[in-house]
Length: 294
Image 1 (tube, rainbow, N blue to C red):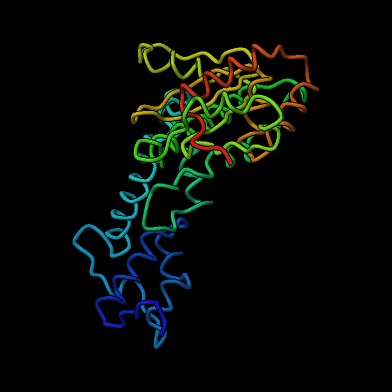
Image 2: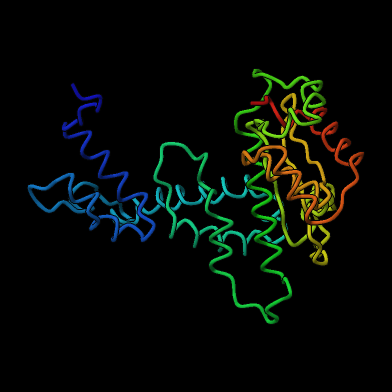
């Protein structure tokens, strides 16, 4: 017995599906009306905009439908602006709208939820950027990509699963990992933990931009490698700046590397005092970055 619900073949349902296909086509109303998604609703004959809709004294059927299509895409652009508010502020509304519109044409919304609408936006910016003037020097486009990636991580942490109703790791469990017994132990990261690394100090820039005078133009910071742990505790998103070596160790542990091997590869980068590492574990436990040990 199939779990797939039956398709409603009533005339109203077919018109509704046709309307959705035409309205949401990123290429516009004429292209939407000719799309396979629209045409398959009426395979028995050609059905166009003029067949299903009527015009008015001032607007053709296509023009009337375009009003709804424009509003639909305007709302999607608005949603992207809510996910990437500092990026929008940095670019300015007109430039941001241009990037967002191009993105939606290439990656139109295909799900019932808008939760994943901006998931590919940072990658889209990276792929559509102009060539660097100096290959080895991060530039304005790199900064925008870093900022977009950072804001997407913040959004995922804010809107995703957290530890508020789940298990939390007893800090003494981390302390007990000291010695041979902990060599093969694997730490289970909190579901809300994200590790960010970038070429610009976007976390500091984000903090400053949130309180900056809207009339003041934001200036791009100088390149500076940045490592940040982003998590959520008691429904509040928290950001923890990380030492590069701390980031390396934390990155390895969150990907399932046994503790002993993770410590060994971190030590190969640069000598780290045991007390420094102990301090990292203390902070990780205090911030609930891990929820278990296996």
